[in-house]
Image (cartoon, rainbow, N blue to C red):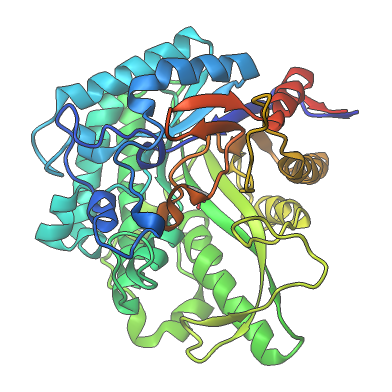
Length: 445
Ligand code: FCB
């Protein structure tokens, strides 16, 4: 029996654009993801979040399912365009009403809400009028929106995450162009990374001021285990830069108050513009860090060593439907590193999970042994990290239910609950029942 500490919390996550649907209801404004999805070729099969899992209308049923599984915390995000459809100014009361219903129903069910304030759905108008996160003004617009939301919910939501995965949205949205707003401009991408961090730092004291003694603030960063494709100096250097770009750039700014010198040196003309005082704003103390982990990349140097990297498949390794290597050891290494190198006070694992091509059997069951195995192997590593003294307070599975997986649309199923998109029927997968036992036992048998 592998037993987790008594204070350990178990959760599940979904995020606004991936599950809510109701994109044109109750005064919601257009987001950059609505616009991005409307361009043919951007999303597999032309999918979009227009309907998604219809969570906007079915949240009661979904919370009922969480209760059935014994889920103790729910990670969700608030959609900025529902609250302030024009990005700044006028507040849409019907947007707040939805999250009132959601949060109150969660609390009635005894489930702790963990709210992320930005999971990639920027109001489109801020993209059109000021270039989105390329503009410093967007960080200030974010702070205004955060003030509205945290003031309204400060009495009921005690755990807040400012941003989800700024590295992904900066580089996939502004450099690779595979996420909204679909731009390909490295200089701009690095500039947005600074504005994301600034937005985060500006939001921290606002959330605290609108809360009470129970209020805790963090940010969610993503981590990928990285190894060099060969033992050459070039490949090891590529890994060092990629680790700097995806991880240390954000960790150092937040927990050490400065961007890493080796990354700055390499960026040259791509170094973002900053203003005096920004570093202090970004490094404001946090209560916890949210960490996401899925996989490892084995990489080497590409043609442009700031942007592309060669990637190799590992012989004999297992890969998920995303083509992501199953590499449980990486979650352990990440946790130990956050503890030893950054002395992060408290950590939550906000996302960890896997996509597989699930099939509904004739009896209505979904047998997903590979997902169970993935979760089990990762949880064993998580437990080993806790045993090493890593201050980990909880684990949340991605995802509560199948949902809109960004540029891959509905083709990727990450849920422990299956969604039949034609009927919106929910079915708990075998992994969901398995997770229910983990929660009930606070450990693995
Ligand atoms: C993370 C995202 C989340 C989900 C998973 C698979 O990067 O935060 O929305 O798409 O990947």
